[in-house]
Length: 262
Image 1 (cartoon, one colour):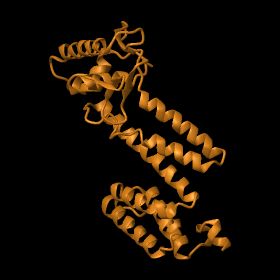
Image 2 (spheres, rainbow, N blue to C red):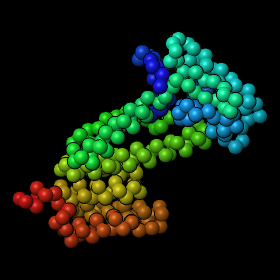
Image 3 (cartoon, rainbow, N blue to C red):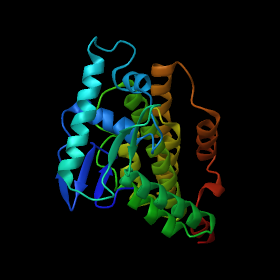
Image 4 (cartoon, rainbow, N blue to C red):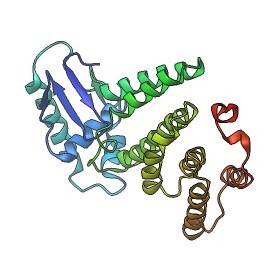
């Protein structure tokens, strides 16, 4: 990873040196850089790079464009400052390889989530939640936001899913800690943004039920069921249906231990 030059992809691509942003050229040139960064030091053939950035029907002058953008990135790296750890974009004979560069915010996110998982497995839910929230705060927008190309489009969808899974796990941990009242507004916002996400609906239902709002929990289920029928022509999955049935019969195991003891 380049010392002094920081690359970030958890949002619009940017490169920073000493807190100052380094100009990276036009969007398609930035897309070339983002694709090469995601190879994590592995060489990428010319054909694979063209397919990743331009798709199956590249323009007739794509070779000139690719060479132009590679040259532009080399100039950008040179202008960012000298040093043995400055990024280098080299041709290896088997493809382009980006050396002395890494995706710093992504590496930091991975470290935080590994520590969060370790804390959760050891029973320290508060630390796990704090680390997960710190990882969430690294996001500045969508993954590689604003950059086009089939490869980055696929990565953007993949990272959106991973981001949601982490959010759901963190909110589930908050509910285990008894923070249901604080979770309700955030869960309501997330369900509004992802109305077909059944795990989020289930967490909202549980939070509402634990806030002594069973009618609202059942309403959240009915609204989700209607949306699923309209959009997918299908009933909610078994986990959500079971939670609904447990709320209807006021299953005491849905309540936190503190409420059962009182």
